[in-house]
Length: 113
Image (cartoon, rainbow, N blue to C red; front, side, top):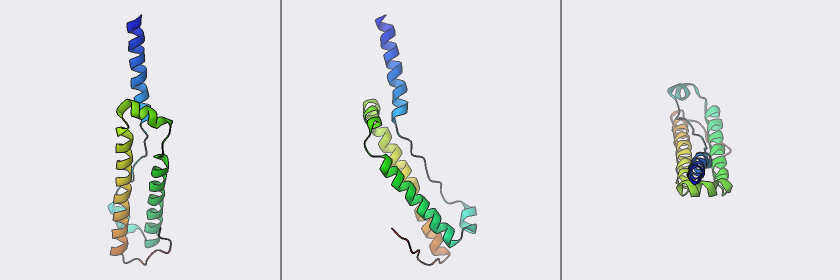
């Protein structure tokens, strides 16, 4: 009986571990189609959307009850890796869009952070 309880407890902890890690998503790289077809205004909008994504990731990264479970499961490493990967994808997209703005010689956007 004790063995069954132990196995059930371990299975429960293993299933909770998968739910504890936060998932932020990723921003895709600028495609060749986007490079050739996007206008300066569209690039400005995409940069703003990507900065909004960064703000969302930073807001969601605030400490919560899920962080306690994540810490118990993997010492919080999974959340940190996920956050880092999400922010890197956003930074890459912003850099690519800004490079395209320079190539297309776009005027400076009026609403910079």
